[in-house]
Length: 115
Length: 111
Image (cartoon, each protein chain N blue to C red):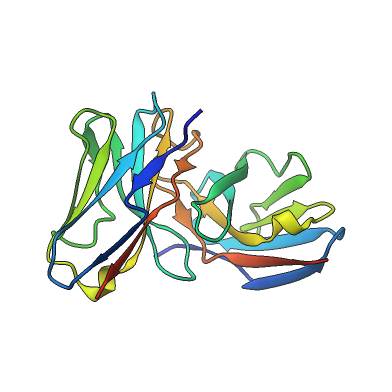
């Protein structure tokens, strides 16, 4: 079946601009996660959705970052007033249910470059 | 804060040999661990997981060992193949939701 998909695969934007990154989870997966991965490092947790609600947003670095999942499926990560330090690969993952015992399936990521 | 880390950033092995990738974790409350494989330009791919009530788990050509006494995790790959070349991450889950990843080890398989 189809895996997690993310669009766009690459996004180049100028400092100060607004960007939206989209994640389509695996159908039927109720839990959705966003991570950020800098070059040469492991992914870092940003936010977790269970259904439509953000159950844990403790990883969002500041209030420029926001994510939504209005219908409990597709999610959008929104970054306002982008900074060069936001450049990274943004990964989305989904699982059947949230919680420790359930495998998270990752998408290919969106590579964001802020110039 | 507590974190998951790896001992070796790069591991080079001969095709057909066994590979061992190590990981140290510091959060003694962690009770679920996962190994992921990440190829260039792709997202992490699940390899194998283990709960803290186990010390060994085997999959196809892979084995994960957990030593809670010294807070150490290892991934063993038998008969390493060129397709195993990738970056390997260990991750821990102790908050029920998020995964905490280590820095990764690059495995290079020489033909």
